[in-house]
Image 1 (cartoon, helix red, strand yellow):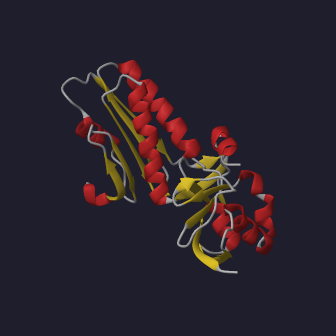
Image 2 (tube, rainbow, N blue to C red):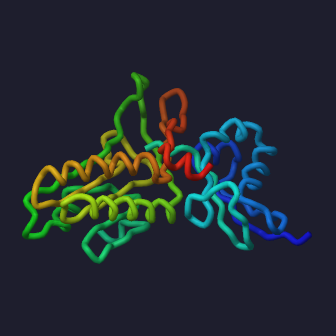
Image 3 (cartoon, rainbow, N blue to C red):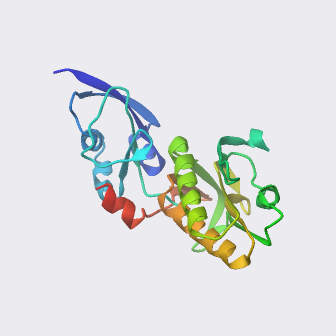
Length: 243
């Protein structure tokens, strides 16, 4: 039987379980996406225990386990998400002025807001999530973020543009930081400009909530006495649609 070769990517806790960031895998022609998970679950029994919370992506899109595989496909095993132009490792500049980016540099939400503002705007809301110094009283030294970058930037843009269509706002920006973050540094910013304040607040609130549930970004927390990937939870719609 002929085979096809695919690229398999691992993120967050799954990366630790497998002990690698990526792998090349030959699968029989006609194989389905679920066979990839089964292959690694046989090698790493702990992964089988994570089956109910793991979502699969095919070529940077969420996909069902029954999706067929082809030569050169890129498959990603995704655990639940935690929640200057040269500074962005990925960015999407929408023609309407919306902006979505991923960076490894500090985020300045106010500066981004000033770039988005137009004369008709009467307000902007800048929500910034920052690294706190503890989790349930356990002292945190620093955080580290990673993501499935090509997929994450696409999903941020999809979420942001849908919000822009459904709210009476001017522009929206979403920026997420990767790598090591010290305490009080900004991990994510959702910035909304608007002629009036209420739509800006509503859009920013919806933006951060949706980003934290569906964009493939993972957080690792480092303590004095250890480290742990932060438990997350996929949005119910993601689980139902891709199971």
